[in-house]
Amino acid sequence: MSGGKLPEGWATSTINEMCNLNPKLKLDDDLDVGFMPMAGVPTTYLGKCNFETKKWSEVKKGFTQFQNDDVIFAKITPCFENGKAVVIKEFPNGYGAGSTEYYVLRSINGLINPHWLFALVKTKDFLTNGALNMSGSVGHKRVTKE
Image (cartoon, rainbow, N blue to C red; front, top):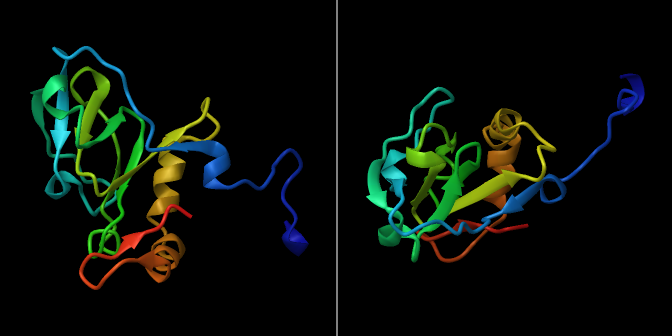
């Protein structure tokens, strides 16, 4: 890989080209799903989600929606800088909802492995770049979608 060239068959891409941001779900109101507030999102690589089971009808509006294999990360300070992020796994029926202060990344047609995407959002470069590009007032700064 001398000279900054990628191996044959590789290409550069952006997250926007590989993932849908904050996709919505349409589920049966009686379905059990996981509900995870910000406190339930780990800051470590191997941390587990802490969630409770609720009916979809209770959490489908006014919360961020996600499903198994989505990558979520906090968009508000200081949670973003603290690295609150996780690959969603083992949620009831594969679905969940939680804080409106999450960004959800869902791979488009398997273009990127969710664990690689998770590793990317945990890098120092991603966290530093996001922190430098926050908007909003002190105490309520958020990472922009760009």
